[in-house]
Length: 132
Image (cartoon, rainbow, N blue to C red):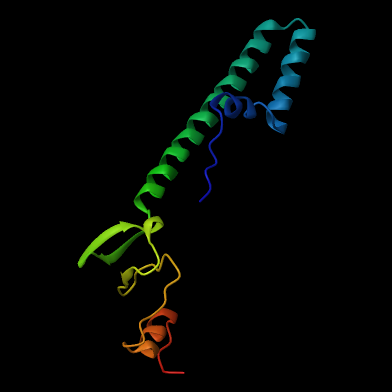
């Protein structure tokens, strides 16, 4: 998933740039023009509270997304130097022997060794029940 986080100041200011905040900002200006400063202050406080709450919720959602992304990092079981290792999928190289397991995610383009039953493996990967 692409990273959607931006500059914190820009994220805060974005909470003031939408139709509902525009309506509240217009109401603040109207109250000031009518010399009702107390009402303008109450509306301004509500506008700032709404923006702060939206920013807090967005930052919590971004933190949750980052935690999920770190837990879902793709790894691969490969045989290197005669031993099986679990490495990040981004470090796979041509010629690596990759171990596939039932229900696992294939994180790269793989070529199958012809010594094994290729038709049975392709059925397992595609979910077919009968040989085609």
